Length: 514
Image 1 (cartoon, one colour):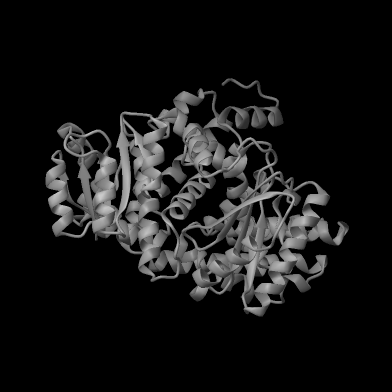
Image 2 (cartoon, rainbow, N blue to C red; image 1 turned 180 degrees about the horizontal axis):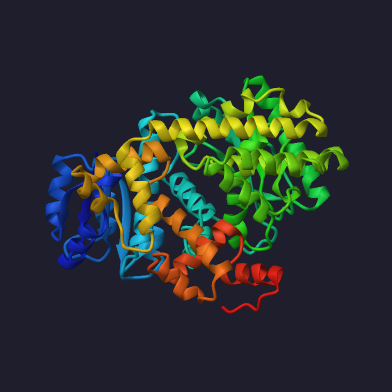
């Protein structure tokens, strides 16, 4: 377990930080929580510390001085700063010293947890060896960009950190490009090589920021780039052609997915979410996929996902055969895009990582190769793929540990309540660390991430099907903060809860009440 040191001259803050996070479930141990900075110094001199969480203004030694001292003693130590002072000079000094984040008091539990999770990912990557030799600034930069794409940083903080990193967020037309190596056992090595190639392509008419996320996917944030503009597309495709040539020489295979463009930097999370959804599908073709070419995911595709997820084989196959009757009448590219959209809807049913990790295998084993098909062959291919996904879901459900199955069941039945990994683990008489690791291994998500996804799905239904206001829906689905709920909803569905309701009501002719 990674060792954590918490330092704040206010004992009540130390106590609150220690109690507010389920450290064990994150594979962390609070080795020392103290309000005495001198005690912290002594501990750093004698024992290893992986993560230091410290206040700024303290007697005897400031938190910034403590971080500097700790890094001189233990260069690999990570740090998170908490403070009641929103002074940019403090923020800048903290970031220069390699701090993962600078959080204001009272500390938001969700933001702190997300920062800690990202810090764990950074620590895990460091344990792979010396593959990534980056400066503290680069580590911070990657952290900011990753939180930006996942919509886990508020606008004020992002604007401040972007300024520090010389990123102009006032530019227009923002989009995300994802490049994922297809050889998973060497994905990090290949991802590093792909990033280096993209960064050395030379001058380009748009601005790009590249980094590698926790899934070893190369993420590019593009500004002044409109994915709907044919001239902009041609430029990007030319750049990607150079990448393909360079990568082929290194025997690297990869898939590319480009999310739709938005007019503001705040549209990046949706572009990222969209590109992520179609990334597995992108591996079926030799060309990059532009998500804007796909039809909007409607109720029909959602129904197909639900059929597959529920194991309703006969209904799903009948749906695919019926819908596929329209494909031969379309031109080839339109038919291909529509078929790919349905493949993505089928793949959406694989919501557990133990299932999703088999997706490339399922796609490659469905013969013939998709790129070789004619529209009249799409229906049979889609049915074969649907059957393979259904079989994988059935296999995984049979293999899943009873504790995980019961935890998932409790989430789905009690999502509106204040449930936690710790309370469920207590019911099974096991540690939260054990259950958390088991849950993460078999579902691919941390317990809280899985819970949030279920809550969002339920909220989406309630917004479309009830007259409850957004505040009530946020509360009834278990969200303690409506602002946080609104942010997550927009990242996931591409529009605010209110916008989503208006759109759904306009389809059915029902007057919208927000």
